[in-house]
Image (cartoon, rainbow, N blue to C red; front, side, top):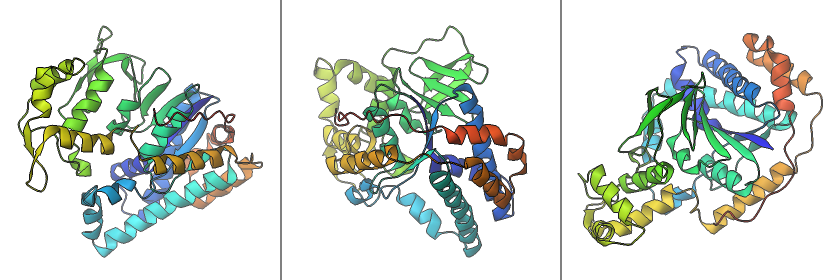
Length: 344
């Protein structure tokens, strides 16, 4: 089975900032239309794939560290009343659309309390190792999940990221570099470009060492540490050699100003960033959500309810491809073949 795993909140948020409409209802409706058009474009290349819309839960990471993603909560508090109302309209519309998908189509909508969408997507791919997965997202956190059967599609940039590298919308291979923050940045078309064999693992290591400022995950390495030094340590890790241990035993400054050893903060960051290290109780919650998803009864009359939704949201441009969208939303979930190896 082939699954398209939609990072729903991230996808809608990107459209929210990209669409320049003053009318909040119009902006929300255009976002729904754009999301469907982008998904249809991808699904057309992967007909028979089942759509899985993955939602955010209240993250277990907030309980582990109050500062986690605090910037986003502070940003919302700092909004004007008008901005908060527009935000509410946008996300109410998103939720109404996703409720339609859940109740009236064969596509899956899944969320798990205490788990972020990243956690659910990671555990879905880990629990379905015999299936193929396309993660529909522009979030660099998913690079660590790349495997021969797992790829990423960025619908805004129209690029696919696989374990073999980056491909543009024309199917051309692109050169890319890895920033200090562990993010992949495609540069130019280069059919001869070959990434390093360990580039996926290197991205994860780099992000774990550098932290994630947008999520308020503090860096583990001392301020000013160059990538060349981190690379030397990375290449020395397997032998547990001097360079590796010299880095891990070095003093560094934590977010509260206290002095710690690098290995302490590195281990803490692994818990937050590495998508195989969720707490056991979170893994159990996500596994239960996946079981419920596979138990969903097939829906009928999808077309009737789809055109009702199109009329309500005034999605005029979607009408021209309506039958294809109905086909996309009609693909049922695959057989239940979940394996209990999410802790590996």
